Length: 113
Length: 114
Image 1 (cartoon, rainbow over the protein chains, first blue to last red):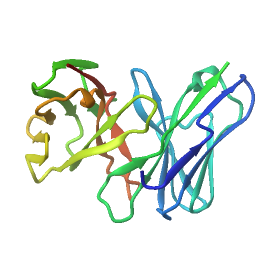
Image 2 (image 1 turned 180 degrees about the horizontal axis):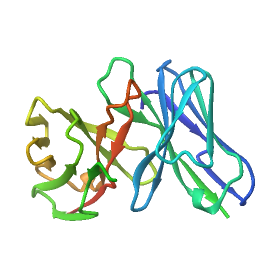
Image 3 (image 1 turned 45 degrees about the vertical axis):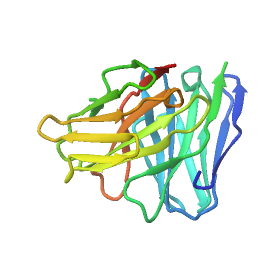
C-alpha cells in the first residue's frame, strides 16, 4: 500500500464550514496528489505537490487549497465546503524509482450537507 | 475535452470467460498507459501498464494490448473470476514538465457472474 494513510476516513459536515483532509506517507516520496472520484467522472486531479512547499493546480482545483510543509504530509483544505464537494477523495504518491505508476491511499468519504 | 475515454460504463461476463475492457485516447503524445482496479470502499490499485514501444504486455491472467494507429488499448482478463468484479480505470501520463500527472478514464464496472 506504499505506506499511505488518509484521515479522516469518513466525514459529514455542513455547507460553509472549513474542512481539512490529511494524507500521510511513510516513504519520503517527492510527488503527492489529491483526486476526487465521482460517479460518471472517474478520478479527477485536484492539486499535486512535487516537493515541500511546491504545489500546483490540477483539473478541478476551484474551491480547494493544499499545503505541504513536510515531505510526509499533504493537506487538502476546503475553505468553505459546498454540497458539490461531496465526494470520495483519494491521495496518491508516485514512487521515486517507478515509471508513471501512482499508488493510492484508502480514501476519505466526505459528505457536505 | 476527454483525452482518455472508456465508453462502456459496465460489463457483465460469465465466470471462466474472457473479459475485454476498452479504452480510447485522443492525445498522440501519450507514450505510456496504465490500468487500475478499484474495489468499493478502497483506493485504486495499479494493475498493469504498457509502453507505447510495445503492443502487448502480459501479467498472469491480465494482458493489455495497444493499437497506436487506432489510439486504442484493451485489457483482457482470462479466465475471469468473481474476484475480478471491480471498476477498472484506464490512465495515461500527461506530458507536462515533470509533474507525472495521470489522466483517467471514467471507468468500466466489471461484474463477473459465478
